[in-house]
Length: 312
Image (cartoon, rainbow, N blue to C red; front, side):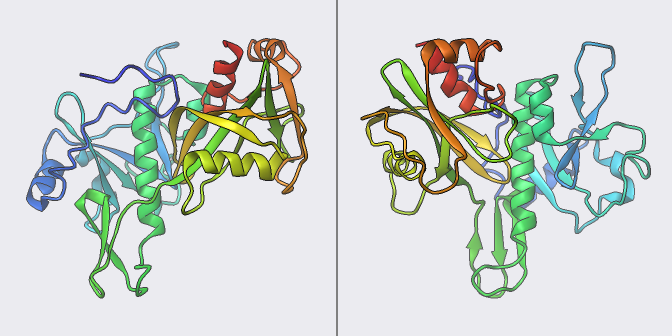
């Protein structure tokens, strides 16, 4: 039974990641060599995006056959297996960052543009399922690019299991993709919610508070600590709302609602420039675009937190 559609951006990834098969080298090599395999090139962690065929139809991910890469695809290229689509076709992401300008030279000249993933999600002219796949691809490529050397002994590590493991041939240590958990929470007190802003944000822009979880913490404890550190707010309870993969570079945003014990704000750790309570009516009008606040874009889980509060 399929999961219900999730309104949070970068969710709804439709691929079968075939985790039980990608450890089999022969199977993985066969998938990559298959004529049905499709590859998307990433240049400096930006995917190839094809232009609209007709106005209003939206852009497409640059899924290409292996032959389209020509000599750019080498035996030492960083290639990550993403999974099987609903037609059983294997999908891969390929790093081509060694190219100087792939939009104007080489095999991808004139095909499209290499676009920033965050900007793509903000524009919203691509299917969310495709954006979820691109988020997976960006996160996996980024992790492999950042972990080319063993953290145990410092020797080069080798890619394994389609990019979901790196192995050190020197000390035999195995390394696995890292995801950093971040709590993002909207504290509420009656018909009010707490929002804050950081220095450098657009004028009057406010959002939910957030912070990285620390070792030995539960989600609830991290929410309580961050609210106390940033705004001096004590809480009575925490309610989980949902999570969002956030490949910038590799976080998991854990969205929560927190019931505050009081409304006395004391800014503490210099992370926030300002914090204040807003009423439900102010949140509703701001979400509609005619209120007193600038609110997070729809692509951010903070938007979903504020929407949940505004809708009661």
